[in-house]
Length: 274
Image 1: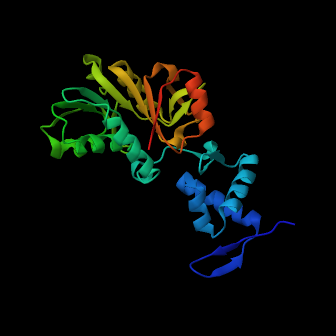
Image 2: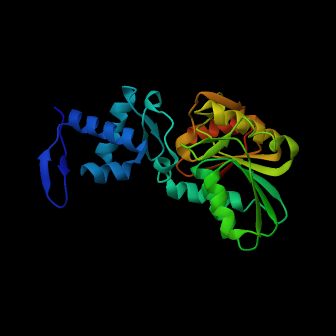
Image 3: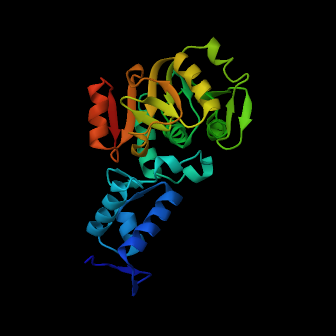
């Protein structure tokens, strides 16, 4: 017979929650937040980490969640494109680590392309924080990233790629979005994505941005993908390129070790930011 933990709400236990009901509530929380750590779920439901892992294993066996290192994610089939503001808080610490690691790769006088997204926004902020950088050219299709750099001009020169505005991500896409990219060859591109898989490649969840991301890859000498651990092992709708077509993947310590091993088997250089 299954034993049940107490669900707590503050310092006092309120009621015994049956395991099946607790797992349903856990699944609802994962759908809302996309990714939650074992420790977060334990605090949320007032149960031990051992019980959380057992519940997640049960949900994973039923195909209702996907286990990743340190926690679990909402099932892929239920995922859709989420607004920038919703995703900004997801894995914020991990994205900050990735941003700082990426910013260390840029030198004064270089030109970089910054893709749209919350992780590339973290890269932008880390670049701005590097007071040693001078005369760095930024090309971006993200309106919010351009605004991040505005107070740091003239240390940075910023070119906003034209195109049609997508309010969901504050991004500019074709038509017109790729015209400037066809005329340049930047030192590096920092590319965001929704999926990184050894076999499925680098993928994105929506088609309009995917088309421009491919143009960005073609317009840079160094192709650097920035993706937090929740993106690894996923395959989404639009394929951008094979994993061996990028020069570096920067991720964080939440990335699943097995997925990292498969990527390295494909000769992908991986930097785990901490």
